[in-house]
Structure formats: structure tokens, C-alpha cells
Image 1 (cartoon, rainbow, N blue to C red):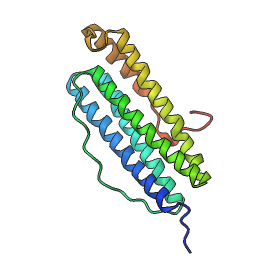
Image 2 (cartoon, rainbow, N blue to C red):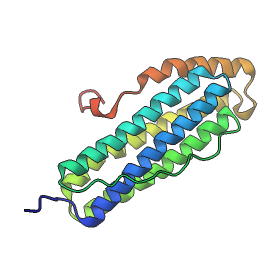
Image 3 (cartoon, rainbow, N blue to C red):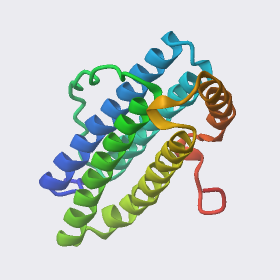
Image 4 (cartoon, rainbow, N blue to C red):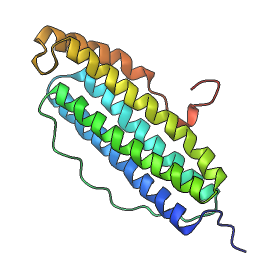
Length: 183
């Protein structure tokens, strides 16, 4: 008996999103290593935590595919893009990546709606809200940097920002621990 509850196109799209989330994790990992190499331990800590969070997103989708009886396809991920040229550029690149990921999530939502796959549509709503949070977080950080001078942030402002990011890194929780009571 076939227990697969996902269409071939939906399973393929969800598998592609697994790869996209793995790639996101690698991007955060790469940028964290770059930030650490530049002496920004607080920013690096924040980015390392986000690399872990993106991996949790990947696992959340992988587990969903398995629960729906479909096959998971683990594929190669692209190399991360070139290292940022500044802290401001780092977060600009992160925002671009998060917006791209939001668009991919929206495509999955649209596809699940078109297929009347309400289980997947419902599952993807968590990711819609997560992307709102991710984009808002990065936009708020870019706003703080803009106030501090953007690309021309003083060394004192960069030092303070790095220290703030070290504290902020503890706010990231694994995706599987998120519930409606503790978002």
C-alpha cells in the first residue's frame, strides 16, 4: 500500500526547500567564520546560532516529508557566496538571502493551496511567520547600524554593536522548541 500523502511536485518542492535551508545554514556559518576572523566574536556567535537555526528548519521540513510518507532526497548544496566586505554588508547580504527564502516559502504555500494540500499549507504557515521574524530581525539590525553610521560606523559603535549581538545570540531557539505558547 502506498502511504505517500504528498504529490510528486510537492515532495520535490519540499526537498528543494530542504536544500535551500541547508544552504542558508552554510551561508550563516560562512559569515560567522568571517566575522570571527575580523575580531567580532559577538556577531560571530549570533551568526553561528542562526546557522544552527537554519539547520533546524531543514530538519523540520525533512521530518514533515517523512511523516507524510514521501521520500527525502538529500542533495548537494551550493557553496556560500563570497565573504562580506564589512559588517553592514554582511547584514545586507543576510537580508537579501532571507527575502529570497521568504519568496521560496511563499511558492510552497501557493503550491499547497493550489493542490488543496491543506496539511502542507498548514505546516508552511509556521515558516511564513518565521520568515516575518527573520526579516524583521535583520531589518532592525540594519536600522541600528544605519543610526550608528552604516558603512562608516566608528570603531566604538562597531564595538558596542558586537557586544549587543553577543547578548542577542541567546534569543535564537531551535525550531522544534517553538510552540504557539512560546513562539
